[in-house]
Length: 320
Image (tube, rainbow, N blue to C red):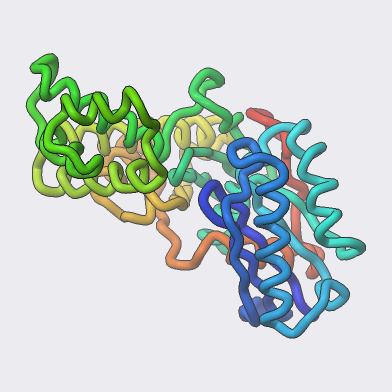
């Protein structure tokens, strides 16, 4: 018997096929799969590519898969599932599957009892939680206008903002003023401005900027440090709200941190996050899983096969 777990993120898609003991047999990869960002066609192609690659590597077919769980970035509201369900069904055929928000596979990756709060901070950000009574809460996790904030994209915007302000003298001086031009292959912020007036930032430039901010923060740059710690504190406030609404403030609740930004394990970020969480839940503690998030999808698939899985809320900002 095999199960399948699929982590469909904002930057890549990762599929793992495992045996009944949860041991990985094969894996496959695809491109970005958040249809809200990359579109339906690209998302579908990414998932199909990852699934087919894993099946080929395992020497298996869909008929060999007892159950599959897809943890998908962008699976936020009921209307998202109306788009995603037929998309995944077309890929999986008659093989039974479940679609969940990728926060849930993150929580399952970092916990054995599937209880705690999970915060994602990668390309974007998201937060969810489950208490010991089985109540589950997911925030809307949509965009800034609907209350969401965080991720590498926010670091990129702030890096640019404060580099320009440093150069113009409207805020504190920062080495971002010197570092950002190198990302664009120019000598100063005036030339960066000229580049931006005629071209959008490339994906590579957007990727490099958060790395620079983290490096400068570690070296003591005040502004870079404030960008990172500010992001951490904001993400902690979301997690604290989930803990509070689930009635776990007096518990030693794990805060599972996933996504490329949290995977840096940077103390400036994590300490600020936990400072915000501890304002509501003093006993909470951080968990940065060593296993990839797709591990949680595999675990949830096994939970289902073993009759252990609880239903997941697919709506935004609601308890089940």
